[in-house]
Amino acid sequence: MKPRLIPTIVVCFVISSFAFGQDLASFEKRTTAKKLDNGLTVIVCERPEAPVFSFFTHVDAGSVQDPMGKTGLAHMFEHMAFKGTDTIGTRDAAGEKVALQKVEDAYAAYIAERDKVVNRDEKKLEQLQQAWKDAITAADKFSVPYSNEFGKIVEGEGGEGMNAFTSYDETGYHYSFPINRLELWAYLESERFLHPVMRQFYKERNVVIEERRMRTDSSPFGRLFEQFTEAAFAAHPYHRPTIGWISDLNSFSATDAQKFFDTYYVPANMVVAVVGDLKAAEAMPVIEKYFSRIPTRPKPDEFTTSEPPQGSERRVVLHEQTQPIYLEGYHRPDYRSPDDQVYDALADLLSNGRTSRLYRALVRDKQIASGSAGFTGYPGNKYPHLFAFYAAPLPGHKTQEVADAIHAEIERLKKEDISDDELKMIKTRAKANLIRSLGSNEGLAFALGSNQARYDDWRELFRGVDRIEKVTKADIRRVANQTFVPDNRTVGIIEFAGPPPSTAAVPPGGGQ
View 1 (spheres, rainbow, N blue to C red):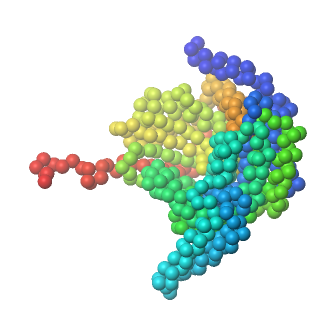
View 2 (cartoon, rainbow, N blue to C red; view 1 turned 90 degrees about the vertical axis):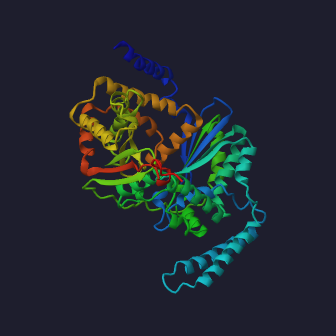
View 3 (cartoon, one colour; view 1 turned 45 degrees about the vertical axis):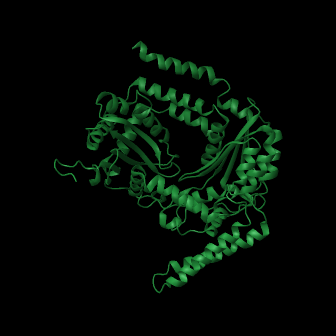
């Protein structure tokens, strides 16, 4: 037993060593949050460890907000946010504005003819398509060709890690700068949300189409996860892929992207968190000077279609020439549920490291899988979502075999209390994970901004650990019994289809 206690002792020592300066009281002394007059929330966290700072801009809009028939639009605008403004990336802003409107007019005419169900004139369609392409060529003359002027400025001034992401729930932007570039950052970051320009939109749309082809259409796992998610969510917008359906990607316009921006990129829908070697008293006026320029607009309606109770198991089976995999998910409430930390505890118990239940059962003991885990928050967590399990069977073992092993572990959760040591380690790791998340300016900015956006209070970053401390063995059993039932289950499977005919072995005498 003594060797098993060593990890616990080490983790506890790390937590106690770093607790000073990493708790809520310490952060309250050096964190300032302010809602600007236009509705945008700014968080400044003072961390004088190095002369740099990082930021995270959280926009409370993801692919769930994509309009019907225009899936992928949230992700598409994320791409456009790097294309510059009316002063960055253009040779002639006034001329470009006129030229880009001509592109939109030509595209609208082309789409109107293309989408006719009857009486479509193919010759006219060809002419309209060419007119649209000619308008794009003319508009491109006003922009800096094939260059990312926004990114060049950031990198040229010492910026690092410039990137962004779009998920089902949100869109985020982030990078880091030397501290003496704070005002330049405030100008750049606010400017791209104040004066975005949909330049080179259709070229960038082609980039997104190729991204879909690579990550989804050409990937067995990508196809499985897309179809699995679509099956699990019949009504809620989680069933629509963030990358977008191909027909929508070939249809939506720069005008659509501008409408999406106007609707969702409003100050009341945005949180900006800045962490680094700065003083709030000095930084906040600079940030307010630039971000307060973004005009106030109404916060969009947050209504979404609710997913009805499932009522029966759903299954998706793909036959592919690739590694088999087993995947299943169970509906659970959103992140505001009183049981949210219970699901976090379950995920830790099942999947955290080589001592986790699924690893020990399927990988170490039964030796039927190369990997297995259970996780929560799929495909997002803002709305009711899934707690999911997966396993990759080893050669010679079937997907049903790993499914049965997963179900045996689920039944064990339902019938038996977890041990005192397991519960203690879950809670200890939660504190350790919090400390690790605070280890970098980038991670802290993300955590502060995300919690402010979700709870309207960045302090929830710390309170979540307090709530997981209150999780009991009875909570684990209760939630497992409520959630992990067959009628609430969606299954996704890849079965190995065998080698293609062209690679089949040639029988003796059956050569040339």
